Length: 150
Image (cartoon, rainbow, N blue to C red):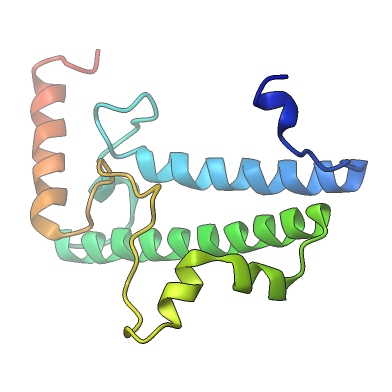
């Protein structure tokens, strides 16, 4: 018997499938929108400074930073909803999750709480600082001038 055959899969109802599907699609859409500024991505559309409104470059950089913050908050909310649905489907209570989670157990130990980085944090995620955003804009402008995006 293979490892995949031993994986516990809860019974899914139409409503739970629809809920999970909606949440997964929304999370994918948000992550894809963040990727639209990466020129080497298949999702590339325009540099960040051209995707937001503002009269100056610094206002546009602030608008992009706000977009990133809003998107990350929504992704965190979606992750919590997916977790809650998964715990419900598997019949796991919140108390059981807290007791069995090694990260939460380590945080409640004698050591002070630390900022644990997300495992799935993308190293290629573009930052919202002005120099890197201006660099992306100049790189894009040169690419357009030299016919890279024809």
